Image (cartoon, rainbow, N blue to C red; front, side):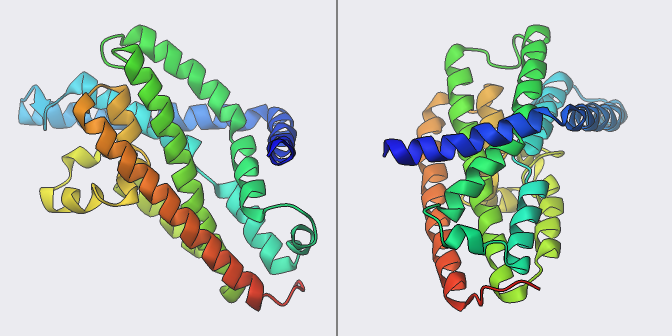
Length: 269
């Protein structure tokens, strides 16, 4: 067990060091968050002014902007543009062969790669979160318990997102190139996961579906805990459903991976 832990922590450490060499990526990510938040601020301020209301679906203007801000940050933290591209390329070109002949789990190796690539964003965005907590003390992390719950929900969100990516990428064993599938998923999740429009504003029929799907736990669940909009008595059910989806998608992704390995011809193109 200790050997397993040390092996993959070394992969994480290696990618962490590599990520620190490309600090400009984090600056671009911060610019994307600020520009996105500015656009959202302009749009929603016009909506509130045009309707002449102080609340929309129980959101005040300040609460909505803070909610969207946190959603954009979490959306960035679970993104996998680089890692998924590398995995698809490894399957298509045959570079995955080196993992098949070594005592390394392709699933856990790439999960550590996934964390390592995004590690610089964790540092930068954590600093932004601390700043916003000081500016909006009543709107973000109202209690220490909300902070702890947010961290747990965030980890589940990141892991859940990775299992979804891994499942899609494994289809490269049969189709060779599945980048379009990953791109389509990323674009769809900008809306469906609540990254730019809180899913709480969606129609009830759509909400009833999303609440029992893994999509809700990618962004809305951790943000709702962080902002105190989710009552404490609903946390347990949310965590249970999120964990069930993590286990279920882990099993599905590994089954698809093993099936793909069996049909894999082990040469590049």
